[in-house]
Structures are given as C-alpha cells and as structure tokens.
Image (cartoon, rainbow, N blue to C red; front, side):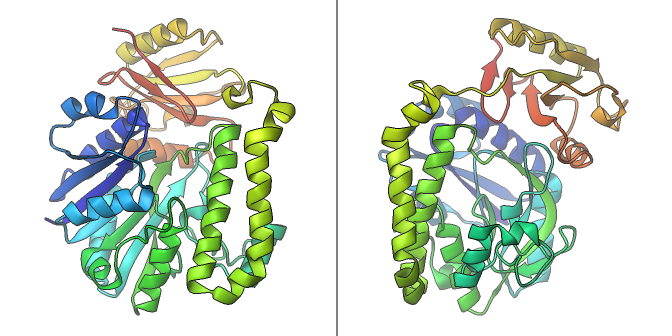
Length: 396
C-alpha cells in the first residue's frame, strides 16, 4: 500500500462527504486506503456516510478523546508507506496527492510535507507553513510585524512568508490540516502527543521530526481548507484551544519560554473563557451563538440540471437574493467565472462539481484571489450545496 489517508470526523458529515469525494478523484491513480475515525459524533455521521463510502475503513470512537488520540487510532490501523493526516473540511486535488508521493519518493530526507492551502476567497492561507515559535517570533506575530513585513526574514518567520509560495522549500512546521508523513519517520519519532487535545499537535510532531535529523517541506500543490471558523463562537473557541495548547508546547520543548509566557498566555485563556461564557451575550446579544453572515447571493456555474436543483434549494431555504445562473462546464468555458462580467454584489461563486473537477475549480479560484467571491460547491450526486458556514440540501 502506497498511501493511507487518515481523517478524523466530529459532527461535520457533509464537509467530510465532500472531502471523501475529492479524495476518490484525487487518489484514483495511487494504491491507497482511507480510514475515518469518528470522534463520537452526534450528527448521524456514521449512519449517513457508511453506505455512501463502502470502501472507506470506518472506526468509531465511543468518546471524544481529542484530535491527537483519534488520529493515533487511525495511524495504528494504517498500512501505507506514507500517511496523510487530513482534515475533513478540506478539498484535495490530484496534483496535491500525486505531487506529494512523487516528492517524498525522490527525497528520502523528507519526514513530512505540507502543501499550499487556499482560503475561501482564493487567497493563500498563511498557515500553510510556519516557523518554530520562539520569543522573537511570537512577538512579531503578536504585534503584527510578521504581516506588516512579510518578506523580511527578521520579522516574517512565523509564517515563513519570505519564501516563494510557488516553490518547494524546507520549512519548520507543517500544518495538521494536510500533513503528508513518511511511515518510517512516525515509527522513529512517535505519533501525535495526546496531551495536545486540539491544536499544536502538528507543531510538536514537526519539531520532533526536525530534531531527529529529517526535514519538513512545503510543496506548491493546492488544496482548499474551510478552517471551521465561520462563527463568532467557533473563532473564540479556536483561540482558546490554540493558546492553551501553545502553553503545553512551550512547557514540553522550551521550559524557559513557558516561564516567560506563562502569565500572558493564561491571562489570554482566562479572557477567552470569560467572553465565551459571560461577555458575549452582552457584546453580540442573547442569540450570539447563532450569529449569521449577511444573505448569500450566488453566481452559479454548472449544468442545466444542477442550476435547476440549486434554484429549488434556494427557494426551500429562503435564499431569496437574486442569484445568477450560468450554464457551463469546464470543457466549453474553461475560464469559468473569469469570463462573466458584473460579478459585483455576489457573495459566492458556486461551482457544480459534476461539471468541473476540483483541480480546475481551485485553479480558477486562485486566479481572482481576494475578490468578494467565496467558494461554494454543489453536487447533484449528493444534493448538497456547501458553503463555508452552512450546508443546504436538496429535498428529494
């Protein structure tokens, strides 16, 4: 077996469904297996997904022991020469999977590799590569110097943003959203440290790989990552776990840094806990957890069948904004939404994934980075319209 793909699921069945469909296409030419570890989901993930993906190995955990624990269960069952640790809220491409296999085959010194992740509007996701967090690096991140001077090796080390995004380069930290690992490396340095319940487990593993004498690489192959931060509530909880796990990382690898940063980190954690449990009803109102983004307005590109089904979804879900429907496939309009004028006012470009490959969709999205259009997808095979913060299903 060349490649084992390990995915941990927790209550994101529709995003995972899309991820698995992208994996099916992307790994078609690679001898592979897919293992999904369900972390005690309560959204009916297993009942919904098992019949749809009979070739996936499904592993059900009766309790949520954390991201690291669940991945380690998958690693223990994996048989591939390489193991890809993959988030369920991603879309992978054939270029990414095949490119990583080819690179790792040709570079035996590589213990792990990450790829070019893009955001919902086609911009480069800065967390695609990171440097080791030491006091100066942390200061530049906290003060914004790393974003203000991204090309500076002095100030930009947190995201290693002085490196070309279109070139392969050694880096220090690989993101756990897509972490392509050599199995032999895991056998030497160990799997994920389960004291990291969520976040920084990837940095810990990356650092252990570096200390073992092997290298971590960034490769310019594209995937899409939703990042799961679509609400006020999730953004605050993300920061809470991020800071809590950072303290654990410092304590394990840099005890002096842990002493230096102990007070500011724990003050930040205490503030976030207070905001989550007490302050937000005042700041955002009593219904703060259900805060919704402005109404969606879709620029739809796909087959006639898909366009009609999307119209039904919009009607059924009261998505009454004037949407625009363009009948097209990647074969008769290879430039996609770039050929369409007057895109102002739309919030999402909505691609029919039966008419466009994921590789093509992500290529097109990158050609207009940072504009107002965020990516949405629709599949007639599943009847699901997927956006960064909501899923809409065709009623059949």
